[in-house]
Amino acid sequence: MNKLITLFLVVLGSCNALAQIDTTSYPKERQEIRELMRHRKPDVPIDCNDFVAVGPKGDISFSHQQWQGVQAKEKLVFKSVRPVPGHEYIRIYEGKMAVVNFLADVQLVVDGRDVNLKVRRLEVYHKMSSGWCRVAGQGTEVDEKLFPVKTN
Image (tube, rainbow, N blue to C red; front, side):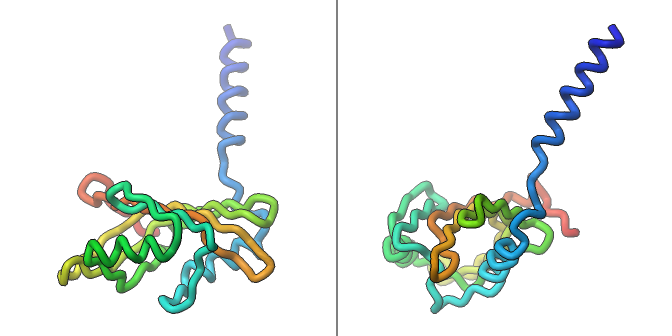
């Protein structure tokens, strides 16, 4: 019985170690992604030509222009999107692909009304010779009544 319990604990511990997110490899690339996220400027494009976006209602856009068209149709204007420090998870693959999950403070105007909310974003970036560009993005509003956001 002791051997069975020991084997179970070893297997459980191994699974936990394998499930850890790599937060140390590719430090230069991680910093480049952080800088891109934290210092976005509205007039500087960060999207690749083959960008795909999924909107809050499940709509899909296959370019930055389509995504902007959906925003205009919904009378939606982004004022700011700021990552919440301590809530960014960046995984780099082979130095050329990045999967980023982060919490953002979003301020926008919807049909003339100011709206402030927290959004959990998932974005994918590709590194090209000209730098990083975003190939995909999707956000989900965080219901803070059900899932309060803890600050670090």
